[in-house]
Image (tube, rainbow, N blue to C red; front, top):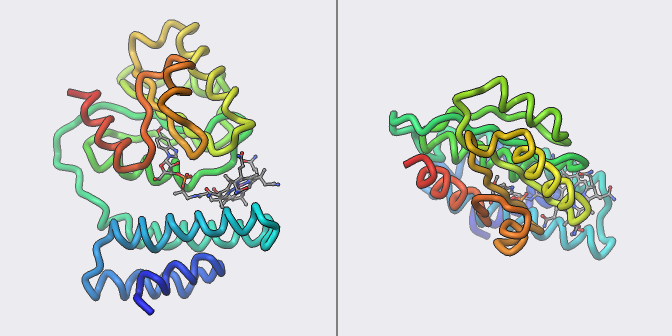
Length: 211
Ligand code: B1M
């Protein structure tokens, strides 16, 4: 079994300590950090999601898998790209109101930071009030990111985009959206400026928007 497959299995089983050891070993053995992330970790969470959907596992198992993944991501963090020194501005990111999923958001934050943005993570379950306050507190913020993992929280994403516009802040900030149920069509329909399907694309788009 390859090291990546072992990492994937350990994430599915929520074995945090084993994940930490295996990720260290994989890096030492020369596996690419992006392969470890994409094939070992993100794919494993996909399997976890499928098992949840088919009632093979329940919320507690999903939670321990998420904790194991988060621990592994922390080991990978220093290996996932360096800030080249050029400043792109300030990026405020959060998961929308009602949504507690934060692994994808955290990865996007990490990758966008590596392109040269200062990142302010305002967490999960972000209300319009909280987002507007954060933008007003950071007049140098030029990009915001909204993440949604649930179909039931997609309307909250729409409300947050509308609130930014109603507050007259869209002149200041561009809005990027993403998350498993989000598509380019949905992003267009709610008036977001950009959609990214994954963290690497989010980083590339953020960089482009800054130039
Ligand atoms: Co939840 N959950 N969950 N969950 N969970 C999903 C999303 C689900 C698809 C599982 C399933 O049924 N197959 C399903 C949603 C169904 C739907 O709406 N269509 C679901 C459900 C139903 C729920 C609950 C309602 C379950 C319940 O309580 N009955 C509940 C809701 C809680 C809430 O938010 N209010 C719930 C709870 C949880 C846990 C707390 C147990 C845990 C989250 C822990 C945490 O995040 N700290 C959890 C988990 C782990 C998952 C799955 C298994 C994995 C999510 C994940 O981290 N993926 C997930 C199934 C799945 O995704 N296949 C599932 C890995 C991560 C790297 O991917 O987040 O997609 P992702 O991020 C990607 C891209 O989407 C993109 O880039 C990232 C990296 O490439 N991206 C962006 C994300 N944000 C972006 C922003 C951008 C750009 C790109 O720009 C700003």
